[in-house]
Image (cartoon, rainbow, N blue to C red; front, side, top):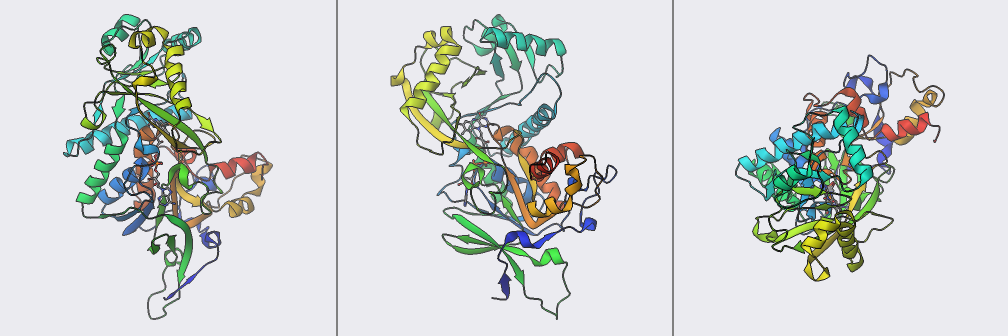
Length: 465
Ligand SMILES: Cc1cc2nc3c(=O)[nH]c(=O)nc-3n(C[C@H](O)[C@H](O)[C@H](O)COP(=O)(O)OP(=O)(O)OC[C@H]3O[C@@H](n4cnc5c(N)ncnc54)[C@H](O)[C@@H]3O)c2cc1C
């Protein structure tokens, strides 16, 4: 083989500023610059959930050939495997960075999923709205303040009374709350499969299931002097060491969710996992008519009309740090039921669910970041960041022209936490802009808020490195 393998993937990063986009040049925060690569003909993705489905969908639409490697025997077996997930934005009282990101991501997600369904690749979903119910005094007060500030348009969120809530929900509720009329629920597993089917229909997507990527190594071809000398960064590519043999990738995107965060090539980024269990409950005549998603401390969904989830409501979910088990437990089912009884006692008594009504349950891992925003973009070369921007430790406004040192042709799209259905489509658009040179769909500040190098920059500023 006409290649030699480098021992460390970190050793071949680039700092050439002319290869970077010109965003933020004005403010001389070089570390905010994103690398621009020549639009690749082929991209490889490690994944199989909603993140990789969105990435494969948008990249194939741009004419790029994509190969997906997924360790499971079918797609969407990780966090994206829940029977029903809610699609709604995370909104705070003020227009802070998190809320601005999630409200934009929400509209993008809804538009993208509608586009998928309208192409004839339907999946179980309903834009039935979502009620954040005022289930206790402190929440009611917070919701009043929310309404008073009127930060967000009413089509996104507005206050409703108990009567209005009962009418919308089609069941009697003794509390009103904040209603998001455009939100709803989706069956994530079917959504992922349909998005992949659309991408496959372009003839540009190849899916390899049952392939566990154990390791990646950077490969550099031996110079062929009869050919034109290629740009340094185009020479390197990746070799995926898997349980089914080796595969080469010119550009690699890691969308592996919580199950990949301990891999050598990812573990320097500050991801963590939080386990969660959702419990599926059998419907009865007292709750069957529910026609909107209700969020309290947990959530309660309407039943789906799809055959595979017919007559099932989902309640959840648990949040457990330091637990990486994907085996559902009776204890956590009980927790979910108790949460419904403690937050919405009247409704819970009316429904009268007991453990006998549990249909199935599922535990999976959420992939978290320290600031609850996902990461999308080039993999930073952490050590070179520390060497390149030392003065930030003394003055966080120190002007640096030097663009962020990154690991060539390696990208990350992970950390979707508890809201991947909402945030993955916008993240995929950003990834596509990184790879294709198309305009970024978000502001420069938001790009940095989502950038995988934001944590090492913050650590330098806080003198943590
Ligand atoms: C209990 C629970 C409830 C939730 N409820 C909601 C909700 O209501 N609304 C919402 O928006 N979000 C919800 N989420 C969050 C949402 O499910 C996630 O944010 C989203 O599914 C993450 O998608 P992903 O593609 O990043 O990861 P995943 O869906 O976990 O996909 C990762 C994929 O990578 C593959 N993979 C991993 N490692 C390797 C490897 N080494 N080689 C090959 N393949 C690999 C896996 O097989 C998997 O297919 C919930 C999550 C949980 C756990």
